[in-house]
Image (cartoon, rainbow, N blue to C red; front, side, top):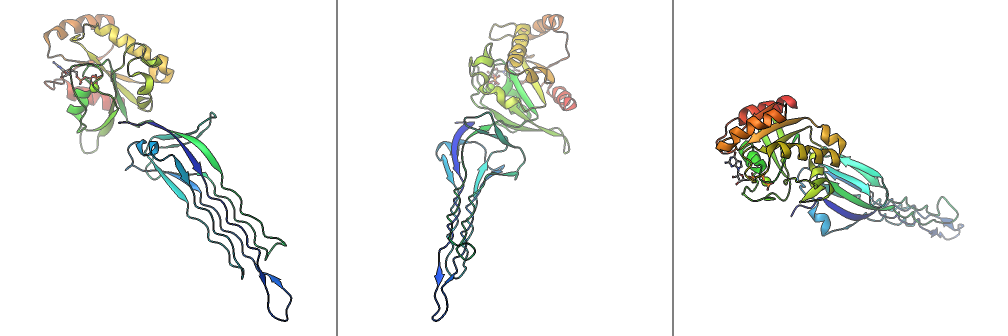
Length: 317
Ligand SMILES: Nc1nc2c(ncn2[C@@H]2O[C@H](COP(=O)(O)OP(=O)(O)OP(=O)(O)O)[C@@H](O)[C@H]2O)c(=O)[nH]1
Ligand SMILES: [Mg+2]
């Protein structure tokens, strides 16, 4: 299961109460000696590369900072509470659940944000006539949204060979089968061209016409390629599913634009796949007449053209 959105409730700790204490020493006037309360724990969000999904937040939805300790007599101040640390996957965007406010976008491992502050401790009566109560901690209802961060997204119709490609060029294991929507969740893989040259690719479920409005597995997954720098547009040049490759190319591009104009403008490297099948050669001639763009003919079965494709992708990056 791939959970990429979760609603949670966070509440920082309350401040501890100030103490109302009187010191009585025989023969002397009563003295006020109540200490201050400690501060409540903050809610701190931390990006952690060891956390992969938001699944834990579907089981635990409440996070509360500890309360500060109360002050006590003899000017003793209460202890400040520990902060509550919430660890999130890289690529999590934190928004208000009800209002259009984005609080943070956690991109780098170890990046941290104090989301809400614990309440201040109350004053003891050693400084004030009357002790005061600690302030309540802030609280918020937030939505966590995970958008994977990859350099390159692989897009295309179902069965085009996207998972075959990621499995061939990286160690990622993405299920491959000859039926549509085999891939149901995004998969990341690292492509190493040489010791210094590498990039991260993301395989997403196949797109179909109307995907931007939720058809098929829909727009839910387009959000994962929103943060890429380039796209590999995979086309089944053999037309195995009886579609026309040039129409496939146009309709996927129109889905991208409809989903998000920026995504429509993202640099693309066009990979025309299944060139090992005889029909693909004829289809490619017709495709080139209609689409006047550079294409990279490949076969994920024989490995033909893959090296050239990856070099072109790296150049684009
Ligand atoms: N002959 C041939 N078959 C291929 C090639 N690439 C992929 N296939 C086959 O095409 C079918 C679909 O491949 P996948 O990699 O699962 O396709 P996908 O684009 O990930 O499909 P979805 O996850 O459903 O969107 C599988 O049966 C693959 O074996 C190729 O270059 N040549
Ligand atoms: Mg797939």
